[in-house]
Image 1 (spheres, helix red, strand yellow):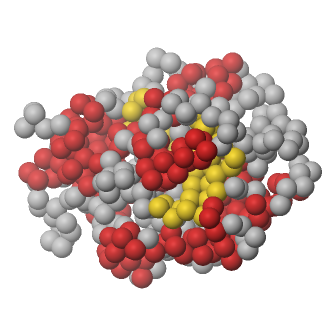
Image 2 (tube, one colour):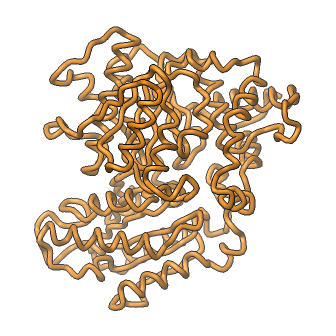
Image 3 (spheres, rainbow, N blue to C red):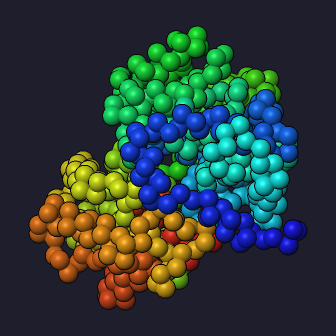
Length: 503
């Protein structure tokens, strides 16, 4: 039993992934199958080493949800706590991962080691095997992938005796598997928008109601500035629970160089600061200070969150720079383009006839509308060029576009941690999504040369296309934006051998 490795754990974990047909069936119900999510999750938890639901309160949870920015806000919050209380153990649970599954479970910002991850993984795996008694015999012996990972995280944090847990919601709020914590210390909501899964409701108000499902009676609840429709739903739920909803403005960061790029990060940083202040007042009797003390500023400046508005010089190809952003909703893609189409990133600092070759690597998942996503990017791109007074044609802003699948290697194999069984093998073989994206790009950019549109079957193929541009570029630099999917960005980090720098 003790010889089981991290690789063994990942093989077992991947066996819990839902196939595409199962995911489509859940979507077809409008998410109503989620009604069983919380009672089932509680039952799974109680089957593991006699854990109790109330025991989760000892984790001292800061619970964070939202449509975009919840991962960044979680990373900021964890980093602040680590700097204010360096003697503490700060647990951080997020999803998805970039390259390695163990990135989802961190202590003081560092992922669990492979050995420690495997230990806790198999403690949960074996406990569910040993205790198969269920209230509902139709409930699977083990939960699906994300629920299982949440159980592993909870179990690990309890065994490691963390002082605080920053807990990022997976999807939504009300029915999310993280929402079995009876009483978090404080909850927070980042920017609201339309989730790409499309199962949480058709209006912003309905989406906000789902996110507000993490609110608990008597627990402080925070939100960043929201559209009025969403804010109305959040206030309604807060009133039902007789709690005060604190609305956090995005101010006070003009003199601080945040560790995460993008103007939208000010909102996430503001929320993180307020979450940390409330938490530290309750759990460490530390009163908020204004202006922010050095420990808070250090936490904001030194945060690391790979794959979000991240610039990575290629260590083996000096003229290639990768710009990585796992944006996968219309709102996050708009933020991505605000970041990339700005001086010092995708634009030269001053208008110049000599600029880097620009390439876009793009993919989407889960049946999202490629046409609308690309159109939104195009609109944001044109707006940014106008803001900065650049007379470039937005249709030819990129010199090359590359549409690929999320399969990692040219061989057709995946890195184990990045394997996705929900992807249709037939669609992969036919490059259906990639061809649709290429067609949408051509329709939206009729002057774009067809020879500069590349449809390739793997991420490694896309990397090879970029490196081919470098070799043909006659000493011109190559700037590559990789976006549309966190899975794509994670696979790119692996396929381009960027892990040592990017992670």
